[in-house]
Amino acid sequence: MTLDKFRPLANRMLEPFVQAADRLGLTPDAISVIAFGFAVLAAAAYSLAGTSVAGVGPAPVLYVAGALLVFLNGWMDLLDGALARRQGTDSSAGDLLDHVLDRYADIVIIVGLAAGAEAYLLGILAVTGVLMTSYLGTQAQAVGLDRVYGGLVGRADRLAIIGAVTVVAAFYTADIYGLTVVGWLLVFLALVGHLTALQRFYHSMGALE
Picture 1 (cartoon, rainbow, N blue to C red):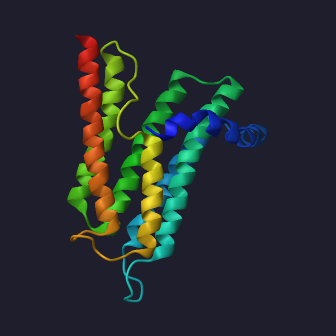
Picture 2 (spheres, helix red, strand yellow):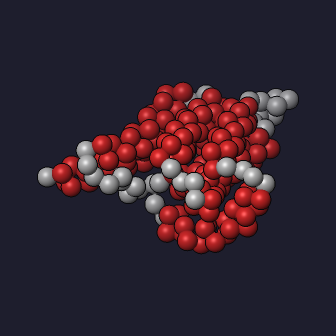
């Protein structure tokens, strides 16, 4: 979870955006919905990016657009919490909405990647890995522990990796050992997702013993 170490810096960078959102009368819930909208647009861009354009292969501009939209989803995901703290409106209901929309955002982004690469089995493995990572983090609370955030790759890291790799995919279209760059991205997401889920499981089991 490398990027979580930079959260204090991110919070300082967010301050002008938090002030602007507050002046515009936006609520944290509205920001969460906007963030999800960016995820849906990213998924649409990725799903279309893998299609051939005039017979010359993938549309690179769509991969770049998808990467930008993924970045915006992550940025807005930070903004909603910061805005809630500024307005004093942070609540369990808002936290629930944020986490539900984050999981749907994860799903649609990965589905978009899998559809564009026509790698549906890898997409299923990646989605289940991401969802199990989140499930194990919150299930710890259900058995009386604190929410578990540890592991190989957190959400911020995952979004950064997706954005960076899909920019590479825009310009490098050759297969690597039978898979495209996006195909290997899905392999990575599947592996680290399930490994992180298992890591959180063993951590929680150890805390319960």
